[in-house]
Each structure stands twice: as structure tokens, then as C-alpha cells.
Image 1 (tube, rainbow, N blue to C red):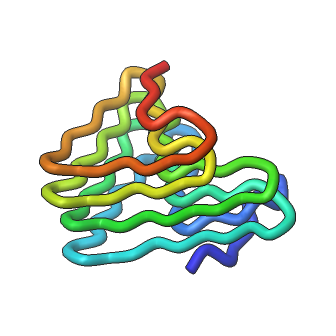
Image 2 (spheres, rainbow, N blue to C red):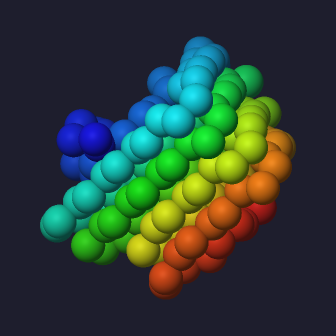
Length: 122
């Protein structure tokens, strides 16, 4: 459950350090990340350190934010996410944002969003 706030006061579930320090997160199989920000911005998984990675299989990310929400944000330079097979990203705003020469691989995955962009590559 995302109950930790970033320096801006926004709630998040999983986040790697920013800057040049890579963070490598392996969530394994059948993990769920829930973030519900009743009064602000909800962030599910934020991968922001240069060359950081996220690995998961059958991952479920469910985020709801009052002002904004994002399921997964690959914001660090050259980050990579491998969501394996059967992952689901749910958001009441943006699903997945990929930026800064980052990559995403997944098989049979689903993005459900009600207000923003499902999959966006910057």
C-alpha cells in the first residue's frame, strides 16, 4: 500500500532513488501495489535513477489520485521495466509514462485508465 510521501507530499508505492544511483527492483510474481491519495497525486511505481530496472510478473498496480495519478513512470535515464506476462495497470489518470530513452517489455498486459493516457512515450 502506497502510504509514503515523496518530497512534494505525493503518495507513492515503490520508488527508486533519483540521480545517477541505479535502483534494481525485482517484485517477483503476483504482487499488488495500491495507492489512494484522497487529497493529492498518487504514484504507483516511479523508476527514476539512471540505469534502474523493474522486474515483475503478473503485477497489479492500482492508483487513484484526487488531483492526478500515474501507474508506472519510467522517468530516469535509460531505465527498463520488464512486466513479464499478465500484468495490469489501473489508474484514474495516466497508466504508464516512458521517458528519457527508457524501455518497457511486457506480454499480455492490460492498462485501464479513465481520464488520462494509457501508454505514453516521451
